[in-house]
Image (cartoon, rainbow, N blue to C red; front, top):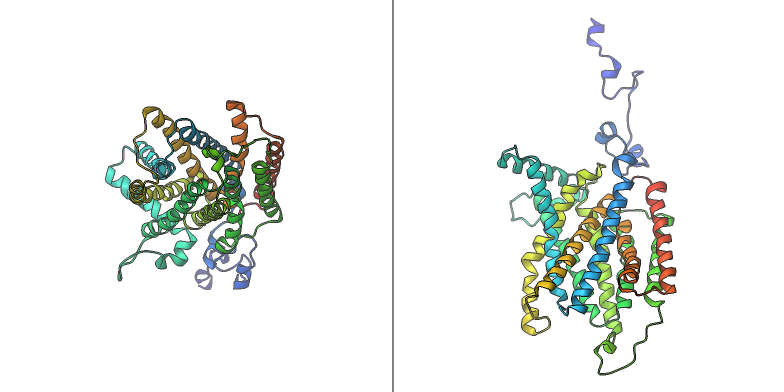
Length: 418
C-alpha cells in the first residue's frame, strides 16, 4: 500500500535522484555567470546557450562582407550621381534610400508566401502574425517596459505589434537625425572631418551599450574602439599631398568655411547613429538564444517600419525645402535614375545587413562595418579611378584591420556567446 502511494524519486520535479530536495536560492540564480536573467522557471527548463546555437562565424562574416560592400557601392554611386552627373539632391536621396528599407521585408514576405502557397492566404497571414508576435514577446524591453512605451488610448491594452510599431518610430527618428546631420554638416565642414567624425559612431555605440544594454566591454573591445578611431583620423588627415589653392571664385575653395559648426553637427550625427544601433539591439532583438536565421523575420519587419515611417512623414520636409529654395525637387534623367537605383539598392542592403549584424553580434561589432568601408572606399578609388592611396591610407587601414582583428577575437573566442 505504501509502495503504491510513493512515487519514484526521479518523477518528483524538485527532488534529486537520492530523494533530497533541490532548493534553489535566489543568490544562486543571480550568481550564474552564464545568464544574469535566470529565473526559477528557466533554471530547470532552459538549456544553457551554446556558441554554435547563438552565433555562426560564417554567417556573421558573410553579413559583414555584404555590409561593407554595400557601403562602398553606395558611397561611390552617390558620389558619381552628385559630382559627375550633377544631381545634387542629398535629402531626396536619403528619403528614397530610407523609404526603400521596407523592400527586403516585402521580398521576404513574397518568398515566404511562395514557399507556403498551398496554405490559404488567411491562414498564412494569421500564422505569420502569430510568429511575429511570439518573436516580439521574447524581447526583454517588451516584458519590462512594454506597457509604458505603447501609444494606446486609455483603457486599451497594447500587444507585441503595438510595442514594435511604437519603438521603431523612435528608432526611425534617431536614424533620420543621423542621416540629416550628415548632409547638413557636408555643407559646412570638410569631407575629411565629416568622415572621421562619423566613423567615431563606434565609440558612441560602445558608450551607449553600457547603460542601455548593460553590457560589459572587454579590455580588447575598448582597445579596438580606440584603435579604430585612431586609424580613421590617420586616413582622413594623413594625406597632405592634395593642394587646394585659395581661389575665391572657385566654389570648391569655400568648403569647410564654417568648420567648427559643421563638426558639431557631424558629432550629433555620429552620436545618433551609435544610438540607433544600440536602440535597435535593445528593442528589436530577441533575448533568447536562437538560430541566426530564425531572427531574420523580426529584424526585417523592424527595419521595414523605418522605411514605412520615413516614406509617410519625411516628404513634408522635402516639400518645405523645395519652397524655401534649399533643395528644389527635380525629376532625374534616365541615366541619373540608373545610378540612383544602384545607390539606393546598395544603401538598403548595407543598412539592413548592418541591422542583422547588430542583432547577431552587438552594436560595437556592427559599427565596425562603417570603419572598414572607409578603407575599402580608398582601395576602390585606386582600382577604378586610379587614385593611388597615400602612405597614411595604408597605415590607417592597417590600424583599422588590427582593431577589427582584436574585436573579432574578443567576440568569438574570448567572450563566447553573450
